[in-house]
Image: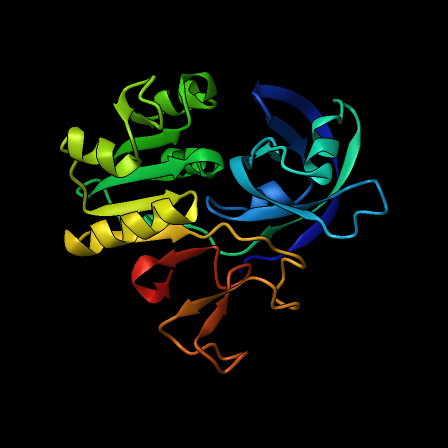
Length: 261
C-alpha cells in the first residue's frame, strides 16, 4: 500500500452523469501523484453527524495536474451531500488507500478483458487507460438510460455492453456479452456487484483465465484497524491469524483464486 495522505482538496467540478450518478473532479496535493488504478479514497462529509467517511474508487488519476476523478452513486445521506457540493468548495479526503491492479505484469502480447458492472464501472476507466496489453471493455448497465462513462471508455478501447433489459446491445449479464461476442482473453480485470464477480471467478476458473477482482464492500476506517471489511481467503491473515483478509488494506484488488466469495 502506498503512502497515505489526508488533505483538504478543492472541487473543480461536480457533474450529474445519469440518474443518481455524479462525477467529482478534485485537485489534490499528493494523492494523485501517489495513486494507481484500482485504489480508492475516503471522503469526509461536512455534516458532523456522519462520522464515517465514504469510500469511493478512483475513476481517473492525472498525476501531472494533481487531480482525481470520483464517480459515485447516491445511496444515502452522505453521498447525497457529496452530490450537492459546488465547484470551488473544499473537502477532506484521505488516500490513496488499498492496493491496485498490477498492470505491469501484462505486456502487449497479452489480451485483457476489462469488466465493470454498475457503479463498479468507474474504476475500470483508469485500468483501461493504464493497461499496456491488448484490451477490450465489457460494461454492464441496467438499461440504455444509464450508460454513464460509455463515451469515456469508448475513447480508450472497444466497448461491449450488456443491459439487464436488453435496451442496448446484449441482454443479460457481462458473461452473456462475453459469450455472445466470443471474446477471448488471457486475463480479466473486474469490479462490480458480488454476483457478477462470483460468476466471473467461476467462468475464468473454468476457462483457465487469470482473473483479478476488486471487492466493493462497506468500509469504515479504510486503513485496516476496525476489521469491518473482511472476506474469506485461502491464505491465513498474519494480523488476524485466521483465513480472513481485510479488503481495505490487502485489497480491494485480489487474485480471484485467492478469495472465497
